[in-house]
Structures are given as C-alpha cells and as structure tokens.
Image (cartoon, rainbow, N blue to C red):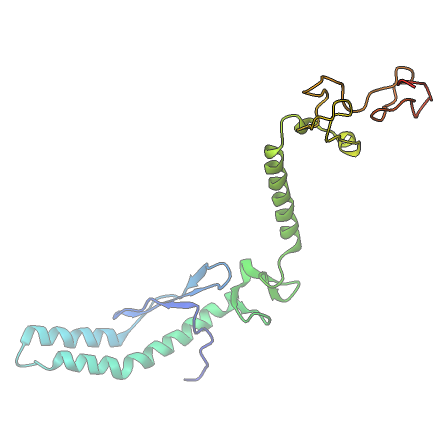
Length: 216
C-alpha cells in the first residue's frame, strides 16, 4: 500500500459484496461522514461463480469454493485500496488533536484559535454561558427549598442580624419571623419614630439621630 491508514478505530465498514463504503465518526461528538459508495468488480465475479455452482451443481460443484478463494485472495487488497481512497476523501473534514490524539470533526469540535479539540480547549464563551445557566438552575432549586418566610428576604435582611431565639422568652425561632411564635414579641429591626432610621434589635437609642427608643 502506498499510504498509511490513519483511521484505525473511529470508522465503520459498510462494505458488501457489491462494493465498498465507510463511515467515519468524530471521537468527541459522535457525528460523522460516509464515503461515497465504490462498486466492486470482485463482488460481481464472486457472485457469478457462486451462482454457477448453485445452478449447475455437479458440473461446477467447486465453483462456490472458487468464489471464496477469489474473494479471500483479492478482497482484502481491494478493500484496503478503497479505504485509502475513502480516507483521502474524508480527511479534510477531520483533524487529530495533538493533546489527546482523538480524531475530531473540524466543523463542531475543533478550536481553531487554540489548535486543540474542544474537549481539551473548550470555547470560553460557551462555557461561561453554560456556567451561568447552571448557576441559575442552582438558585432556582435553592429558592424552592427555602421556607416561605425566607423567600421574601431582601439583601438588607441578610446583611442585618437574624436572631436564632427570641430575646424576650428565649424560644428558638424556626425562621426569620417578625413575631415570636411563643410570646408574640416583635422581632427584628424596627424604625426610629423620629427619623425613620432602622434600629438594631434591642436598641435603646437611634444610631442615626440619638432619640431614645427603648427603656432605659
């Protein structure tokens, strides 16, 4: 053979007695290309000799065996030649990654800018978009698991102090409630009656205007 056969594992042999055809697949996405069907003259000779043996029986009783010998002697050589031709036809559609050595399709799985397949060097824009989508899904599931009271928390609520127990009766709080479920005491920050500023829990004076707001 005049050329080395480059593809050794990522193709399927679709050849029949009538001719040769091969399908080459990308080792990343699995899609591929088929070579054009090439008719075989050997197939016709083999079929003709086999038919003669079936029809004429004793006269050409060994014709079927002869057809097999014709095929075994020449078929492999003809197949390899057809495979070489198919590879020359298909090779422009594929490229071998220098890092992982996989044969990948140029159209969908080759990162031209990086000189690597997209398994070894993914498109950053695609990965960023996928990461954003994945993060959004995670947030949706996290939100779905939250208690109804907590779903309404704002950024200010999270920055503020969230109490784990009531400051009055010390009962444990199962959520960021506004009132204690045990004693009914109002929980969380309140607003100063003078300036409207937010008050820290149990504050006695407003941090904004100094007005007394708690018992002293």
